Image (cartoon, rainbow, N blue to C red):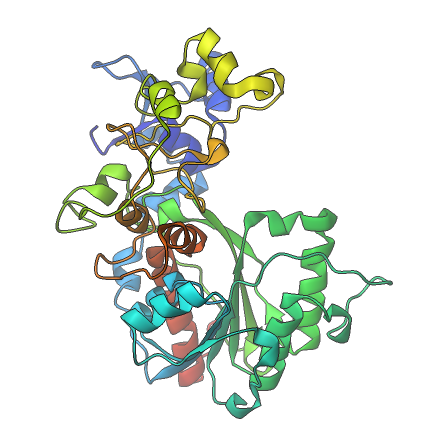
Length: 415
């Protein structure tokens, strides 16, 4: 498709409304679609979208300018809950030097060691690590702690009240190392977890530790040169002795949205087609069903009799269940990758072949480099990749953090 035109799916993602809303707008004249001459699908010209702030940000991207950001000195980083290295690679590409990475999963630790023998990978439970040796030696402490509810009485959670959660361990590491900046990433669901109480508790502890939290923001990876519709909640905290002198600026989106073809074929994102690798297989019965699904389709594209047999009780329940019996499309970003590409709730079928995505296809959709090797059994490799922060998203956030630390270094007031 001409890059001046966008599909209904792309527009829905760009302006954060549903495709159903766009169809309704088309019918009532709010935003009238054009029709693609090849297939009569709804399409929109760039000029129709310029009134939307998110589209303006895409069309007037400062990505190339921000790409030139380099650290004024060596900035030191501690990463907790490091996983298989998605965030760490992105931060490394931005110019950070990792001095410690902690992860409890042995296969993920082996992955980190295999690819970066020079990294200080500390395997094991975070509660057993003393961070006091790094006090005032660290520029950024980062990590994606698991989302857990807090159990406490009263309206405000204090640092000590968070004991028993992995966020407490994250907060303890902050208290002991006293970095200039903290970076936390999490699932979008944290915004509403426990009716918003969990996030309010986290904000309260961060404030008590002496950090001013930038208003958290959900970043859509597809806007940051990642061919995937993954969303991550990003929290940035600035130590209060710097907070009134500098301002964190969120990364600009890339100038276009990458799709599955960009991930798996030679082009702008990779200089070769995806290399061959191991992958899971569908049972024959499931393969027969999925062979009937068109590119970009899902279970509702099956004959009704097969729908009922495949979905069983789920057929009669509400909700779209759009991840079930799902075949990806070359022309769209992938759906969010999960820890397994073949489970019934989260199928991610190859667009042409009737099979799950392979390990290397998974890795490319998460924008890992082709030379990043994964350790452990194949189920663990899928899990490591599926849980990772996309490398290019991490790189974009990392560049924003480099600019922030450069401003601190210069003593520059940017407010």
